[in-house]
Amino acid sequence: MITSKLIAEQVARYLLDVKAVQLNWEKPFTWTSGWKSPIYCDNRLTLSYPEVRQYIKNSFIALAHQQFPNAEVIAGVATAGIPNGALIADALGLPFVYVRSKPKEHGKENLIEGAIMPQKRVLIVEDVISTGKSTLQAADALQDAGFVVDGVIGIFTYGFDFVMRQFTERNIPFNTLSNYAYLLQEYTKRETLSEAVLESLQRWRDEPQKWQ
Image (cartoon, rainbow, N blue to C red; front, side, top):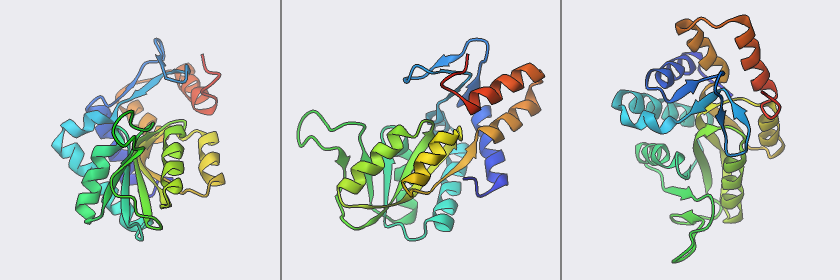
């Protein structure tokens, strides 16, 4: 869900400016899932640009105040959700934890790093929500530890319908600063794309697992 058109447009511009998002439909990228994708998103790059980092942080803070005012803890999803989660927690004066993709293989073998606070309302911070797998796994881990998951915020989502359904079925609201539709809107202001390419990009958005 997008709550601000202005923020969605500006974040999309920033992602393109710093090349955090790249499009290549002639030589598609391959995701971990094996899916072919015309788009590659690495939002970690935004952290290297103070103006962009500050804008994203402030937008996250506004979103948290607006949509999740009762959050008591901020949780970053490893690894890319950790830095923005820590920035938000610091700005809001809230405790911070982060969730690993799997338990640590030595020491205490923690899956969640930080103080476990049962019954505390936690807001999860992601960078990109693609298939939703890592985010929902983090939500499961936090719930198993006793936290109450308030929702999820992220920088960007592709907006796949099946992902939206998963979050709805789990009753976990999520909001992102920008999404695929706004990204294409901004990209087409810079580059002229043929109808065939636009149609192909839309097909990928509708059925990414089948796209060629």
